[in-house]
Structure formats: C-alpha cells, structure tokens
Image 1 (cartoon, rainbow, N blue to C red):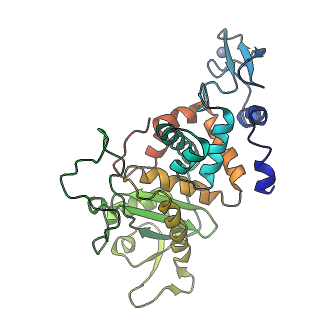
Image 2 (image 1 turned 180 degrees about the horizontal axis):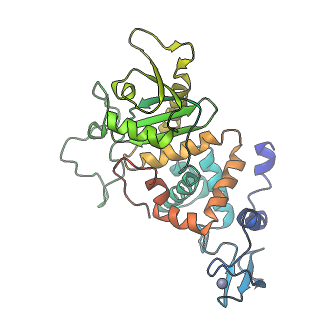
Image 3 (image 1 turned 90 degrees about the vertical axis):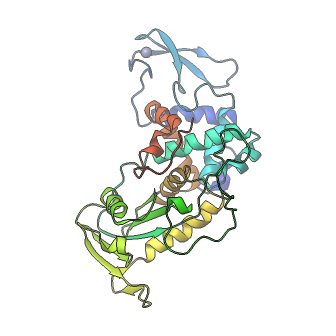
Length: 334
Ligand SMILES: [Zn+2]
C-alpha cells in the first residue's frame, strides 16, 4: 500500500487503539501478562482512553489491558504520538527532529528513540549469514558526544577534537576516536554490521565467527586482518594495484552497504562511541527489511515493543548490549 494513503487515516486515537490488539495478540496466545492465565474476561473501559478495554484475570485477580506491561504501558503521551514516532524513526529521522515534529521534550525523545531502536535490534541478535559473503570495514569519526554527566562540555583532559577535524592517517581504533564498523554482506541479501573497538586479527576473526557460518565462501580486501581469517573459503582482492574484482571475487556489496550507512549516520550530526552499536544495529534492521515500506517496518517494531520480554530488555538497553561483544564503551540507556 502506498505510504500516503496509509499515513493519513492511520494516526488518530481510535485507529491506533484499534490496532493494538492485532499488533499484540496476532502471533501470540491471548493471556494475562502477569500470571499467563488464559481465564480472562472483559472488565469495562477507560474514560480517558477512547477504545481502550480493560480485562479481568481470574488467575491473579487483577485487571490488565492490551498494553500491560509493554513499552507503551502507562505513558503520558498518547498512542498516536508513539506510533508516529516509530514511523518517523523508520524513515531514519534523528531523535531531535522527531521531537520537534511531535512536540515532545528532549529527554523524552532520547528515551523513546533508544527504547524503540532496542526493540528493533531484538530481531537482529541471532542473525547469521550463509552462502557466499563479502566483508569490509569502515572507520567513522565517533567521540564522546553527549556524555557529560554534569551537563555542559565534558572534561576530556585534552583539547576538544572539533567535529570538523580531519582524522589521522592509517587505520582507526577507539583511542583515535575512530572505532571500526565491520560489514558482512551475503550475496543472497542479508547483511550484518558490527561496531568494534578496532580491526585487529583477533577482533575480525571473532566478528566473522559470530556473523558468518563456518565454511562459507568469503570475499574481502587485502587488509592484513582480513587475510588472516581462518575457517572460511576465503579469497581477497588487492586494491593497491587497482584490482577491485577478479571474477566472482569482489566486495562491491559491502562497499555499497557503507555508501548507504554513511548518509544515515550523518543525520545525527556527530556520533558518540557508546551510541554507535545501537545506531549500526538499527540500520542493519532497516537494511534487512528493505523490501518493506516504513509502515510495515514500524509495525514490526511495535510488535516487539508490545512483547513484555523484549520491552523489558529494550528499556534496559540489553538488546544493543548483546550486539556489543567487543567491549566498545557502552552506557546503560534508561
Ligand atoms: Zn493474571
């Protein structure tokens, strides 16, 4: 369905409330979220929430509704606010711009966007690539943006880097404020991107073992850390003598993924190292669902946000932490 015809009637209170039972219970058994009893009966409505229905659980003798206890439970903002925020997040908007369009405060939008990104990333935690794959790495500039606990500029013990400063030559690593992003792209379509502290032989081997099935065919460039990969049918091209493809051996798809990733990261106007795994994981989610439009992607995120287990993990930031296997500095997002 074209997005325009979809968006217009979609974001009103009645419609959003009517969508919630479908999103929550379509793939799950209707049961009490507290005691998992299926003995549930209708128990009136809410005067302040049109269309909202309350239920009574005979197991734990308590009331519940379709939002108990999910990411959207007992929120001050209405359901249309949340649903529109998810939709705009799938269009790769920054949280600051979403806040401006929705009229929510800076702190609120920060939490919302991280909870929702975490919910999206929960779909990606068990992904593995099979068949023929390609790999490449990128070193984006990422510092300590927004990390001052006392407010104002953070005391770094050095001169600020400055957002426009050119980086030092050579490969990046965490201490140069240039952590690595590894991309693993299957020629069958799926992608995996991982934010790592550096790009040493050990890190690349660990990243490969987590992303690609052992014994798969793999094409990379001639970087020493990629050449040392073990456990794969591995071939590489040498970019120094201008060799970019040799028959089936090339990494065009991995380079293409970075050409899509870089503009998406530029939206944030400067990156923080501790937020990088979350951003990269969310962009991986969007890329793997590229056949769907933003409304369908938003529905998937809402389904995850309405699952109590995922909602609890998303609120604690655990979904992103489980992608963060490389000790990249990561703070809890609560
Ligand atoms: Zn119950």
